[in-house]
Amino acid sequence: MQPIKHSHDPMPGGAGPQISAVAAAEPREGLRRSALALAVILTLGTGAALLAIGNVEAADPTPAPLEAPVGPPSFADVAERVTPAVVNVTVAQKPVQRMSMNGRALPEGLPEDSPLREFFEQFGGMHDFQMPRQREGEGSGFVIDPAGYIVTNNHVIESAETIEVTLNDGRQFEARVIGRDPKTDLALIKVDGAPELPHVDLGDSGEARIGDWVLAVGNPFGLGGSVNAGIISARGRDINSGPYDDYLQIDAPINRGNSGGPLFDARGRVIGVNTAIFSPSGGNIGIGFAIPAETAADIVRELRENGRVERGWLGVQIQPVSEGVADSLGLDEASGVLVADVLPDSPAMAAGVKSGDVIIKAAGEQMQEYRDLTKLIAGIDAGTSIQLEVIRGGEVQMLDVTIGRMPQDDLAMTKPGEAAEDDGPRIGLFLAPLTPEMREERGLDAEAPGVLVAQVEPGSPAQRAGIRAGSLISMVGQEAVNEPDDVARAVREAADEDRPSVLLRVEQNGEQRFITVPFA
Image 1 (tube, rainbow, N blue to C red):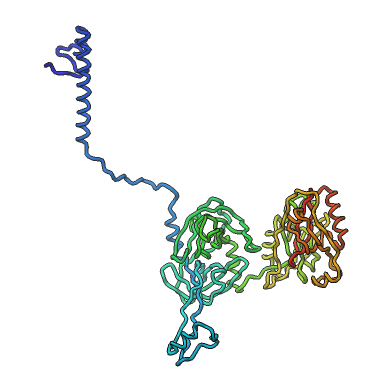
Image 2 (image 1 turned 135 degrees about the horizontal axis):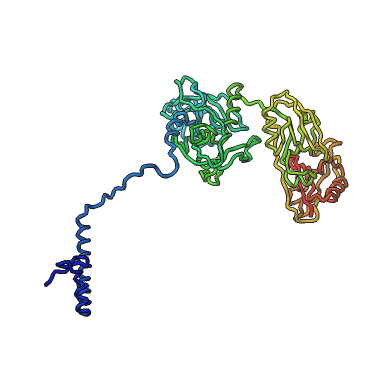
């Protein structure tokens, strides 16, 4: 049998390929032989390929590491540098004094029917009985001075009888309160007798932008120091916790025990103090809030110097100027601060500020919303004179006021306004004049303005706005009212001026506030 050659093998004597020569002489037989040769060639080729694979060494199943990491940048360097300054804060009650149980003596004041009486009578020989130390709660804090000054939240330590601070390295120290500020939920505590402590400086969140990486460091659920990463979700959040709300919103996990811990940027600078979360269950759902570091720095400085924060005081109840309020008063835009009430013997009353005034400027600064006024006045020293620019009766007036010192009780409150939907032609109020008996019952002066709400029509705009029977209406717009006809006339005038709503000052449950009631 002649050997089979591949199509590219040359014939002896320099002739052409064998398959081609045979095919030319014997076409049909050549075709059969060509097919057979091709099958053999393919078989040989497959075998050769299999033979080649069998001779190759088995591949290494371990993949080679990548030259560069994939994913977000590592925060390990920042965490390693800042965590030594973060501490755990444990609040506990002081141990109860030891009591000696001589013979069958009973504790003083134990009721006759107390189930403990039988116990003490049976085991009356016990001595040196002591109640155990009771843990009240845990939080976090951070050292801002190597001398031992530590920032935390007020709600972490406000009920403390003893405070214990645990450092990152496990050392424990007793701490004392230097000062607290409930209005911003900040507190300053100090450990004495500790050696030089690692610390961090309060920075500034002004450069932080929405979307920037942040690290929340603290003691969640009492597990010990931990680091959580996230981003800034929003700025300037008002969560209705107080008149000075101006929070950073973050999605870095903050859980119970993280309160009072620092919020760092990606460079390791403190830009906030972790304070609160929004959660139906009490656990983290990605909505946390931190006090901006610049706010904390001002408060901490005053706490360190004075033990408390002294704020300026104007003495007014205020609320935002909503679209409904602006329309009711004929204002060009919904900005400024609406004065709902002026407190007696306050700087505002002495300056001639009246309920219904809209403050558009204070100390030369434009007031866009009510928080602008509270923050501005709080930062002004008592005794300082400033000028208020107010809108009253459609005209701008300038009032000089001397800022006072805020009393211990919070007498300058903010009351958010309410707005009702406009879906009816009547506001639905039935009014009656105030009788002397009513005035006496409510503690009102004989000259105090006001009209009694005798009935509120069900389903009316007034009812949807929250006005209830028994309330008092003392102003419509910026004008005082004394009779039901005064209210009716003022409401007609507002409707004739094509305003979409009317503004009423209503007293309910001892509180004065302005409410907008729409027309149809």
